[in-house]
Length: 310
Image 1 (cartoon, rainbow, N blue to C red):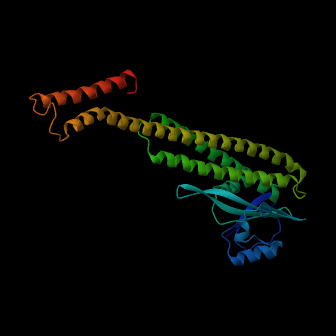
Image 2 (tube, helix red, strand yellow):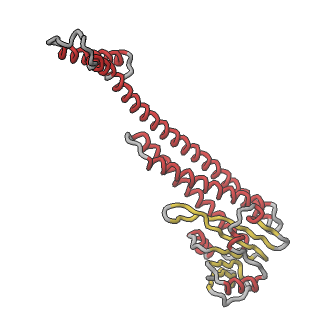
Image 3 (cartoon, rainbow, N blue to C red):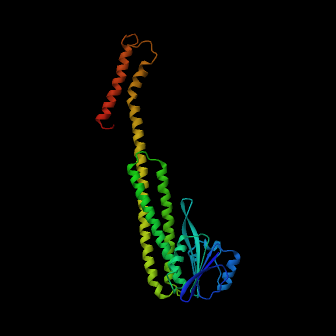
């Protein structure tokens, strides 16, 4: 699918399909394009689109490529899939002040940019790219806020819950993974923005906007670092509470074992099969042994309480 935006009579108009010329075009947005559509765009605008493999490369040199008249950028946008967050590659090419974007997922960010473009009259491809990047930074900020709320909720549950289960630990681990993903995504944007500041293609009037965006990205990195520290603290607290609970159980079993050791010793002594035993023919032998076992347990229990071990 091809969506394109052109400036006609100092107004931006939107069209779809491949029945257009490059006259006045400022943005081409490719959504799951066919091979025929790719060939048309490459031939019309004299560019070479990124392949899927190239857009998914993780090397820094593959994220930002600049020649004398063209800039190629590969970014990962975070999307929701099955209740979890995953990275989706999005490619951009800027040439002759025309932006060409290529993606396989319908991001809401692009729909928002579509609406914003209706309010603009004169705009170029590099300006549209900056608008998209700024919108994604705002989206990352919203994600961090959502994670912060979830962390606060887990913190309250950890204080109130008496019975800890592994579900809570799995939620903490899941948030840690999401935080790491967002941090990597933000660092990627930071590197791209730093490279853009050195670019000779972007006009100097865009530099101040880029610097502001770098500051925003830096503050988001600080927030992600703080969120990860909070998650580590909650994880350590959870494991500490588990250790305390396990120690309490072990202590209980130890106390019960020690309390029953004296009666067991007495019962063992009177269970020996020797012919000569003083209490063997004694009429009060059985009650005496029972009282002796009870007293030995009671005295042991009183000793533990006096030492405040219980």
